[in-house]
Image 1: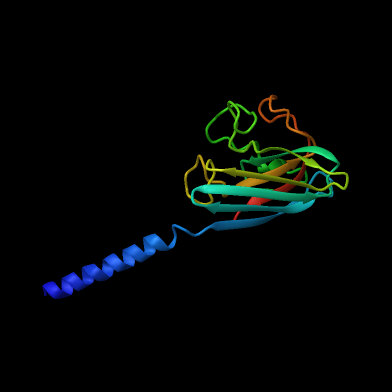
Image 2: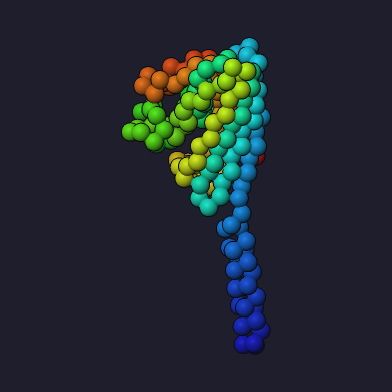
Length: 175
């Protein structure tokens, strides 16, 4: 009888060890497509990759007016409204003032500005440990949120959203 119980415990230990070890090194990846909004022709993709407790975000956009544009994570993964207002306000689970990422107070959704070139193409990349993909922590989990590109730049001062203008592209952050 002891032999069977010991064998069962060894098997259980092996299963638990394999399960806990198998997912720790794996990266999670989300690839999203932007929808044009507010009668714009802005399109593009966004990629979120989580690995070893950090999320790297990269967006590549086209169809923009040349110059600076803001990009933010918003409260809802709803891009159904023609002006993307259905995505709600900036994602702010820690109830901070709007600001510039990494400087003083800022929303978890305050990604920042990027510049579109003369052809209307722009790229932005950010790596942070302040986000996760599907971890369930309401102060970090980006799933179920919206990703919005704005017509203008974020002034990092105006409350609550940075006065960045119309929402020209939207994507739902969903699996």
